[in-house]
Amino acid sequence: VTVRVGVIGTGVMGADHVRTLVSSVARAQLVAVCDADGDRARVVAANAPGCRVETDPEGLIGAPDVDAVLVASPDDSHAGFVVLCLQHGKPVLCEKPLAITSDECLRIIEAEASGARRLIQLGFMRRYDPGYLAIKDELLAGAIGLPLMLHCVHRNAHSTAGYTDDMILTNSTVHEIDITRWLLSEEIASVSVHSPRPSSLVPPGFADPQFTLLRSQSGVLAGIETFVNASYGYDIRCEVVAERGTVSLRPTEAVSIRSDRRDAVSVPSDWRVRFAEAYRLELQDWVDGAAADAARGPSAWDGYAASVVAEAGLASRDSRQEVQVALADRPGIYGPVAN
Ligand code: ISE
Image 1 (cartoon, rainbow, N blue to C red):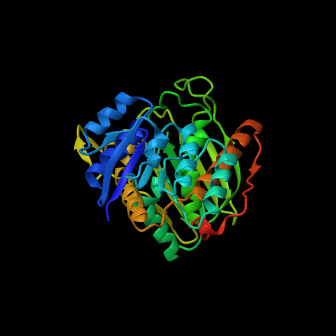
Image 2 (tube, rainbow, N blue to C red):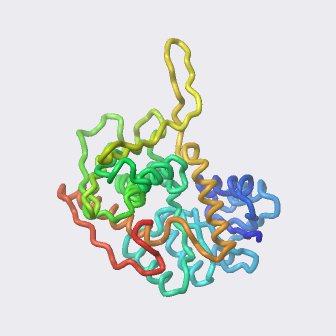
Image 3 (cartoon, rainbow, N blue to C red):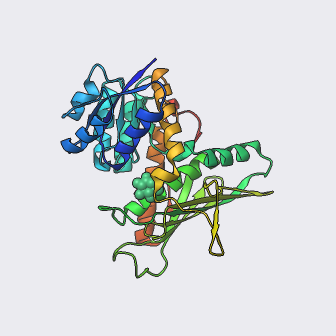
């Protein structure tokens, strides 16, 4: 079966997804793209044979030759497009966040859960990263015992244009929140956010770097450093400390280069480089799920749960208190907790 895909949003992530879909995803056919900036959409379509430009996103979602929709438009437009996809009964891969507030996320999960099956996959691509998958396998195998703590590092070289202080939590730390829930197969119970003295190199008003402490429902602690203006590159680390050992991500480079009496590995410039394989596997799973009429991978519930924790983080940052996390009941279509 071929899955005919329409893409809404052809900015940085949308254009990257289009490249991957066209070059490396089996059974996918890109048929339409749409962007508020028509020129940008035309450039992307010109590089994808058989792809047209739609000017109206709802027209793309409703088009009879579009089987599945990828939403990579600006964050505040995701919710509206996802709801339209639900109304048209079309599978949708939505970049994170699912919506700007957890209340909006909740309305989306209620709408999806009122139908018979999942249609939404959320773009938490790390769950497809071979390194994180290997950590999860090791924890499930149980040889190192039960997890006790996680050490996570999330560094971007520079914050991008339009990036706000709140986005440190809602746009970047949110990946660490999701991966912690997923690795531990449980929800987060409380969160506290801390900042060191300000860096002279960081724009004023940015609590960057920032340290977030998550406590899971069973009492595992996850300490997360997020630093979105770390200058030197994109650096993601994770170590799980368990009762009888630890398991951690390795640097992803295959080689190190020795010269000038140094032994060096290069550091990726951004997430598109670091998670290229994860994005490819994510898109393939999404297309396979659409072909089989069964959405898989991270769900709208995962988008909701992560955004509730990120919002609690904002409250903690402002109140300097530990904040408890309160989640709605998990609808049955989302299966067991944080699977
Ligand atoms: C960006 O939006 C992403 O989603 C990246 O995966 C993340 O690492 C980065 O911090 C975000 O700004």
